[in-house]
Amino acid sequence: MRRSDQRRDAAFALYQRDVTGRPLDDLLAGAKPFTRELATGADGALAEVDAAIAANAHGWSLERIAPLERGIMRVAVFEILHRDEIPVPVSIDEAVSLARRYCGADAPGFVNGVLAAVARGVGAEEARA
Image (cartoon, rainbow, N blue to C red):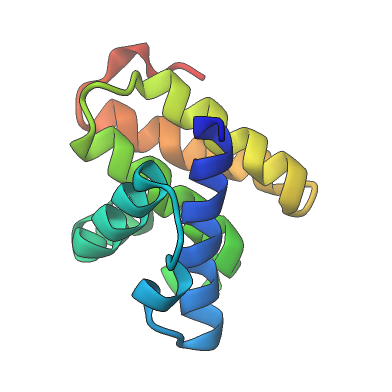
């Protein structure tokens, strides 16, 4: 399974947890290690990740962001903040691709803008996605 697919699965697990309230461990049963690392890592750093999203989603409260877009951004922000081995542009591109495939027409631009701002905020100048 490609890392792209595992990022999708991690974002979907976070989304499903938000929507259904099911425990993340149940949603990750049988998940690949990378999927589990991303989902549990984003969940473990949720306050920091959500604060970064909220601070850069100008005009949007975290609760107003669609749950799937929020899950996608949570995985990407976790990668940007805590997974130095993953290039920032890869995290952003993967998130934008997921938003393009699974979310509304405006989602890719919104996700790209928020993530690029998060990346600039942590000094990842190569984040010009």
